[in-house]
Length: 111
Length: 114
Image (cartoon, rainbow over all chains, first blue to last red; front, side):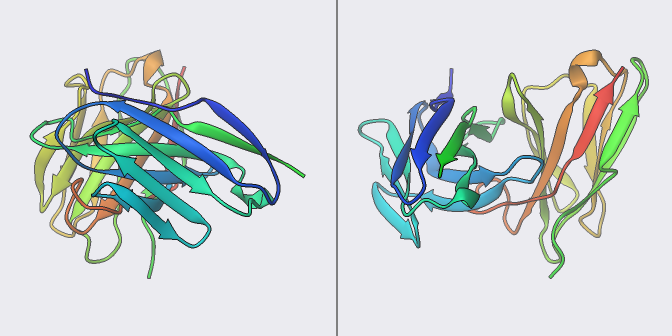
């Protein structure tokens, strides 16, 4: 079946860089999205990769390699407010269950 | 510009009852998608409505249904509630639908079934 795999938790230090990986077993999707969700909050859109390569948006970058079935979210200059869960998601082509999400990665930031 | 509004924020229901949740999308957005979020299963797609028509549907039983009105507001209904339906129900609006690159989520409705 279609699935996205992410680490359940990642810990990093304030000011450092952290990479959250997303590997997938799916075919025929439009692109890979990333969302951030703070405890008790709504998911908010971070980035989208339609094509292979790196997309940069401020401190956040996202990467996609379709040949490796792999993507990642890179967070630089970590701040305490970045403590949250991060989800990758793909929008599928030609399927009724149009969008699937990874289970999310809980990012813990240490001072 | 107002964001996505979901009501109610919290709800407690008894097994066997039914429930209706509401979602008002961002003005101008014609697509509303619904998701169920649980600790065990994560975020799962329920269905998407676009211009009052259901366009896509996830793998949920027929007890889960929805509709969209001409003003793009959407409702989701769950009948014959089960304990396992306890979850955070999120809706998201976008201009074009689940193929859109960016969706805006509401704060969700926390449903507890007892």
